[in-house]
Image (cartoon, rainbow, N blue to C red; front, side, top):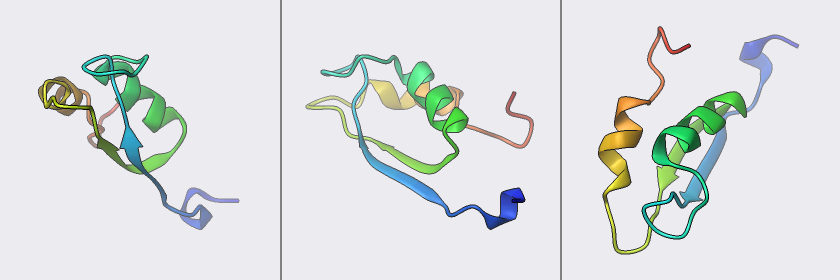
Length: 64
C-alpha cells in the first residue's frame, strides 16, 4: 500500500508535560510523526507553554 492510500489520522486531544502528560512537546510531535498522525492538537490544562516547543519540532518537508 502506498503512502497516498493511507487515511489521514487526527489526534485532537493530547497533553504534554506542561500539564498532566508524560511526553515533552518535542517527544509528542516526534511520536505523532512516527505514528503517521497528520494533524495533532495539544490540549494541555491551563497552559499554552508547550506550543512554542512543539512548533519548533513540527514536521516540515525536511523533517527527519
